[in-house]
Length: 354
Ligand code: UD1
Image (cartoon, rainbow, N blue to C red):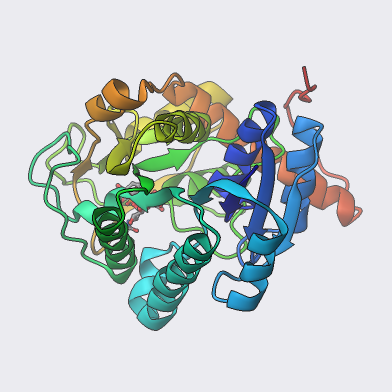
């Protein structure tokens, strides 16, 4: 039996695929490559020394997705494929509802037809909207304030309804906080094809001198230093949360929701300082207006995942800053080589598979 990973060529999916392959799982990736490239799939295979089955399929393409389901027998589905920019979702809600919700409905329909009963769904802390209490527990109210979050919540509600209607289903919903960092190899990580949305890709671009300044969105929040506080989680810890969730699905029926974060908050200035300290790099930044829709503090209560999934994050903020920088450098070296540009030698060690 194989595991289907939708969005397996993406930032989070690629890490999960590497971890699944390390456990000798048969991995099938479905990804439309709208925010990734085939090189990521090659790198998943390079890191793990194993093959994956890859299909460039948009989940909305029922005929092609059906074909994948008829070619393999799936024990579980890890569903990450979707669009994820808050800003884009405000500009183009139709695309977000169509891609995220319709794509998921078609996937669930294929699962039903082919008798696949276990799914892990990638949700987001965005579903909480403006939190009433910190840290945020899974039982907190869910009131997303943008179309992206609304699509995630709609899918969560659908999954809960399905589990209610069919007692044979095993569903885990994982609400991610702020994933950063990259695989230790520096071969896979966050490589947004368009303008980044999140803090860390902006930081690494400033460090590469691709941007002059980092814009710090506001310094008068009611936080330790006035800048926004978030719960950053290393991508390796996030991925291990999925592996623990897979184990949990072994003898669980119903639908359960878990936060995946580090349980600790860092401000924007703390991240900037950690990045500078760990990597020995100076970052130019300037404080600008607050970003619309930002909350002051967002930190996960991770007690439920610790108790039921037996999962705990291990990586430090230093690991996160180091690995985020490494992938950016590796990417730039690869690009420079491709374009025949000789660039100054930067300090990163080559990663050698164990
Ligand atoms: C954002 C999304 C959220 C999504 C999450 C993970 C918004 C409003 N929210 O959350 O829905 O689930 O990413 O992908 O887009 N910051 C700066 N300068 C920058 C970028 C960010 O100061 O150039 C600050 C932000 O104000 C915030 C912190 O850095 O305090 C983290 O920002 P970001 O990485 O965008 O994540 P979130 O805002 O938590």
